[in-house]
Amino acid sequence: MKDYKAITQQYEIDVYPRRDVVLVRGKGARVWDDQGNEYIDMAAGISVANVGHSNDKVVEAISKQAATLITCPNTFYNDTKAIFLEKLFSIAPKNLTKAFLTNSGTEAIEAAIKFARLNTKKTKFIAAMKGFHGRTMGALSATYKKEYREGFEPLVPGFSFVPFNNFEKLAEAVDDDTAGIILEPIQGEGGINIGQKEYFQKVRQLCNEKNILLIIDEIQTGFCRTGKMFAIEYLGIEADMMTLAKSIAGGFPMGALLCSDKIAVEKSKHGSTFGGNPLACAAGIAAIDFMLENKLWEQAEAKGKYFKEKLEKHPLSKVREIRIIGLMIGIELKDKSQPVILELLNHKILSLPAGTTVLRMLPPLVISYEDLDTVIEILVKVLA
Ligand SMILES: *Cc1c(COP(=O)(O)O)cnc(C)c1O
Image (cartoon, rainbow, N blue to C red; front, top):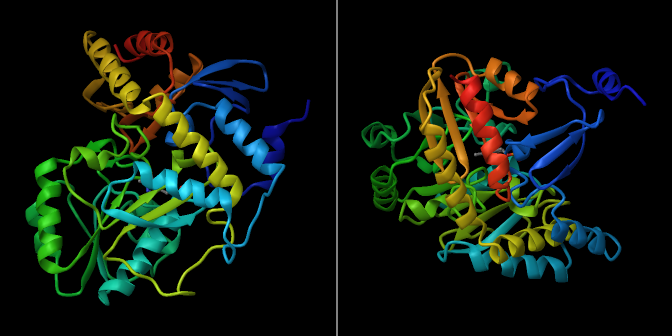
């Protein structure tokens, strides 16, 4: 057998803090390494595999589309893309009526930034401290974390940051040149910080008064993760633009920016070679169909509730706070999360950090109750 780890280390730029495991296969909420070890995946590729790894429907759709038409320039119409758009808008918030399709989350954010400037003729943006919106220059400018920004400045000018869930501070930051406010409904990378309904309602009101576009980043929270199809349903507000990616196409790379009627973009002002290609669209149709047929949001809500109630029955001396919404799980520890993540890996459980002290779990929403029980059992030991 080849030494995959050594080959990767030789040839790939080493930007990822890496675990010492070579994953080669996945099914549902389980993944396997090249030694034949089996893991419960409480990361799902960072909320990518919501419908489960190698979901049968998604596999079939990609295989069929691959044998039919893999690529199609966006200057032509395509049957699969049309069906995907229709499907996407059948589940999207009703005020969002048009989409720009991308290959990733960060590209959806880039489009939102460009469209906001174009439509408001203003230039500035406000984002939240601890927020994460991506790594390309525009999205990075909206991302708070210093380590991600350092060394790349000057970023796009005009971005400022305010504390999340603090309306007064946000209102103070607004001026006549504010084009957009970019917020996650629940901060993912930032530590599973749950947005308050009253806060978002006031932000919406402010945006209306000042002619500011509200951009809601649902890249991590979207597609049933939080117990709703989209987390914005908890907030009782409408977004002017909403960004999607991660789980949109069952694991296939894809993103989308959804826009309300306030947004108009002229021909040739923006574009993408691969965005909305037939393979991604076929995968997206299958993934959304699977979510609808299995009421995946209900599963996320029920399983998240089960997980929370069962975990909280136990004394967890290492834990400061547990924040769970659907199957978006944040366990804030009193100390760093990295040693706990490594210990869980030794117990064959994949998990994620969010910031330095939060243990983040985003399992495939199809995970079984038996697997959740196993995870809880081990967590109770590790966090005692
Ligand atoms: C992952 C993520 C992004 C960036 O998506 P990429 O596909 O990695 O570019 C943006 N916003 C949020 C909230 C995310 O979780």
